[in-house]
Length: 91
View: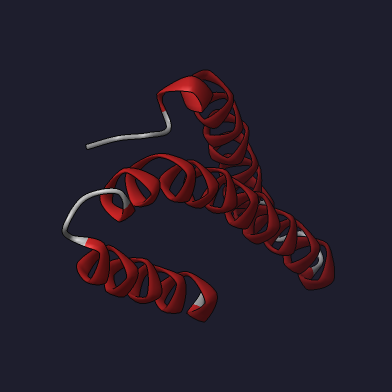
């Protein structure tokens, strides 16, 4: 089940931008650019990836979790949400 359909284009656009940033980092490494400049770009990619994850997590909570909470599977939905949040904050 997916609940991010409404944000799909925004998510894909951001992921394509991240993909371009990663290619840029590869070029920087290949061209032996200054380490700090590469690390700044890596930090930017990590932040952008985190923001995409937050969009998907928000959609998941407002869609899938809300739907599961209104069914008999409430405890399972809460546990799944806690598991995904724990995995997400580790990154």
